Length: 604
Image (tube, rainbow, N blue to C red):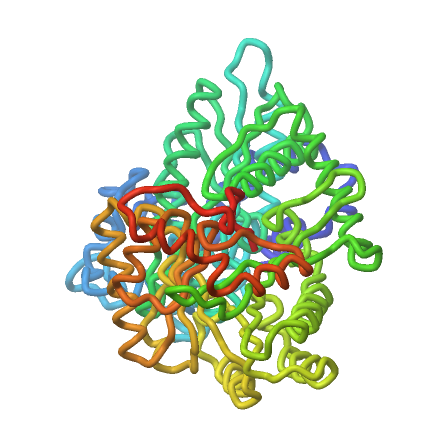
């Protein structure tokens, strides 16, 4: 046992204390050699198995004891015929992170049973047969605890994948072996899209389950010469060596994206995350670990900014884009103070010709770059924790603007998940309403389904408190996320907004028509008003009016306007400004009126 303790202390002592160690002692090959040496010298019979329960690591004692079946890849039941296959579910539970279990083993049918310990290791299991177990019964000895920890030292406890420490060793070894006569190595960094939303809404337990399931899918996608690692959180990596590049890295990335975009089912809830991947090659992009990781990280950021759910390969121009993003981040922190943020307002129209309100859309006029789309700067604001401050400003400005309109008109404001999940939302809204002096029912707050995945007491309290205050609540982008009908039963929505995705092909696509018609009927049956977003043509408007959609929004009816322009728009309602588009709706074809304009709808 003293030998084991010394080995364990050496394996885990801090990196700084081993500054003078040889490079090969830090490599994955050296770690494997130490494990093999341990398996040979321990007094116990120790063996390890992969996720399919096939033998991967063992010492000569196992061979001596069960020589008839000991070959790499042999199944657990070929080695231990006395273990019934009915235990497979229990073994799988241990493999997925469950607590160790004891089993009884027999070398032959007439032999007295012996106790063995089964524990999770490297997304598989390990088995310890020990004479000491026969005397200690079901008590785990200190030495056996060290055996478990020894194997897990270089593996992630949650997923069983190799961990960051093993990753660094392997990447350095791979880069050191690459020269001009060999194929380059590839590093793929993988981030799960929308993982934080799952963690925040379904809870950390569901998040852990998601990571375990994602790790299994990543492993299933790998081939020879490819190894997977969990770096931290929802960050994974794959090192690919001995392959033809860039074709093989691109093939693997496409396979991983396809595997991870299929919904996961957690607690009977379908969860969609997907993955973004950054690819870099050694030695083309870097010859040192840190530089290659930076290159793949930059490529990963490019994949996320290009819409996520895709892979991008590093190139030098990405460095410039990254520098620009950092400049935007610094500028955004000062944008509100400098008065660079402003609001535009897109009309909400009730057919046939009544303006019922406007939706406030946030914009940023950068002094050097010009107008920056919300899709660019809002994710930065959310990541940097700026949305509470910016969101408060948006609500206050929109409410103040609404007080300049007729008292029958409403103003709609989008909330980011960061605002909704903060503990100060209801107090902030109440304070603004009191300070501005606007009726509460003239403010409509729009939320998306991502903030409602977990029906917690906090979620219910926030929505009910806002409802008691008289604030209108709208469920935005309905049908594009999780669309659980329980949301409509358990939360007090006033409005349901059909996403523009279903409106775009409404004139020609029967599926879009069926979905839109069903949403309208469902909402009306529950006493909820319906607004269709992205109405761009008279044909779309005509179809929605025929199906009794309550409110329309889009360029055909009115493009986003500056604050002052809203007054002129209101003055033209309902007769002057709407006669033209009402005529257009009555025809089978035609162009949008001048009221609608031709610019794209305001992004949020």
